[in-house]
Image 1 (cartoon, rainbow, N blue to C red):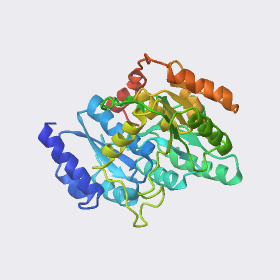
Image 2: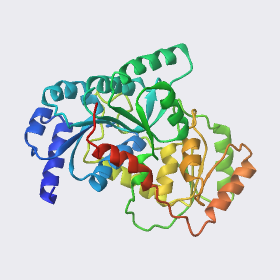
Image 3: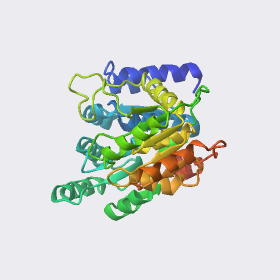
Image 4: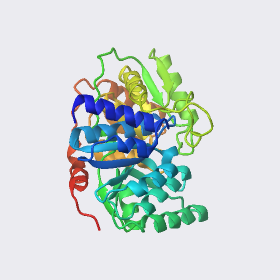
Length: 365
């Protein structure tokens, strides 16, 4: 695809995502000689981790699979897109669902949309991009698991990609689908950022149902760091000026495909300007890794941060995970991380080889 054609294609996808044109009108303007990949579930809410996943998925196709027409369908468009796409579907079309940490019973707005997609396009190759899973061990959680099993298992062409080993085991236990194992796809990014002077400690902490980090511990750490003469700043990977997850259709401002890249870029610059990051967010850790910023990781409620660390990142000399609750010991870890001068290089692109092969392979049942 030439640069001008790519630019026109991107404009069409933006127009479609903004409901300026229908999916049928969008597809009608595309050439017929390219295979199509439809990525459902693209986020428009305020979580920069999920937005970075969508951005990385698009870049993944540009880098490894440029022969595909990569079509983004936002999650609020799910029902209408299914209705429009069914009569226009080709045998070689591939259906995808955007990755993240929302398979399960906690974020049902995502799970219900995902079930519709997986159970509808049963004759086409279908791929759930790198995900974590969390079906709660409660009557309601297990009820939702059965509903997902019924939907997923209708699709003999479904492949689920796990991004850490705990979810890998759960996916293999829960579903009949083929399961692949890769890193989180944001780790495939190599952002180009300006050099900056690093100053202070940046806390990137959750304020949601996955939070288990003790507020008193964080307050004590902040006070001691500031008392020692180091600046402390706090941020999160959610943006309050945009619609929360699940509120995209309430009239509050959503993130469109055009501004997504710049919002991610600004957050990465903020992280890169810090000496050390302290986080309990998976993408707080990943953003630190791809900006080569020393980071100490606490866990979330179901282990996706710690399992991702131990599966993929534990060998890096500027990344550490802790369950420690003693402020003195935590401060010692932060001091050690801040003193790392030559940060290890990393290259996890080989983990995506099976995923690339799967997409290129023509076989469906």
